[in-house]
Image (cartoon, rainbow, N blue to C red):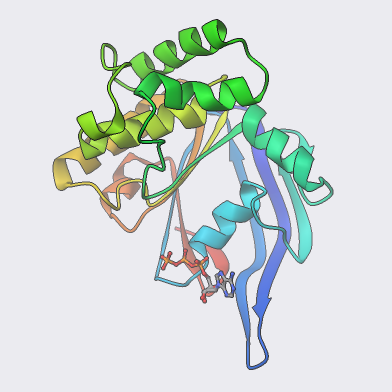
Length: 226
Ligand SMILES: Nc1ncnc2c1ncn2[C@@H]1O[C@H](COP(=O)(O)OP(=O)(O)OP(=O)(O)O)[C@@H](O)[C@H]1O
């Protein structure tokens, strides 16, 4: 299922400059992706995958070019507006789950909801629903240390999607997982896309491409459709 474009970039460029060199981490990136799409992005180490995700998430700012995400002009948005975009529409997960170890699964998922002003009972109900959606019903009150690596990463996905966020940006989400948990993670991401989520997944793992609707390679900052 694919629908309206949720991400559109035009000629996005980002360079990192030091006294000795200029590294083009994004070069004229033109990228469109829609609701319900599972996009796999791969590329050599240092090619610019994380830079692209960080630009899409508004965690980093492009030098030139346009970027629209969920109806927001990210290039024109200030830091507060970009943070709000992440709370409302764009969830991000990384290789390491970045859960708060002292909080239960449900408390972790509730964090962004409480940050945007939901009451604690509404946040808890939504957290329980999101945990069920990622296959963790019944494990809401476990601490991260009482979950497997794959389960912890699922909590991270539930947290990223909590509040009905439509875009999921995942940077090497299976990098710390074994082979079976990796396959389960891609199966979950496929299911979420089938439910309407736009998932943009940077992954070295070739199995990611089997599950994706569209596949891109980043080569020296350029995004090439495969
Ligand atoms: N904050 C920064 N300052 C300077 N250079 C940077 C910075 N962030 C990234 N780079 C450089 O930009 C290029 C792209 O980096 P990026 O992390 O986006 O690549 P990547 O494809 O995600 O790599 P990996 O697979 O190793 O995570 C690399 O040459 C990197 O060294």
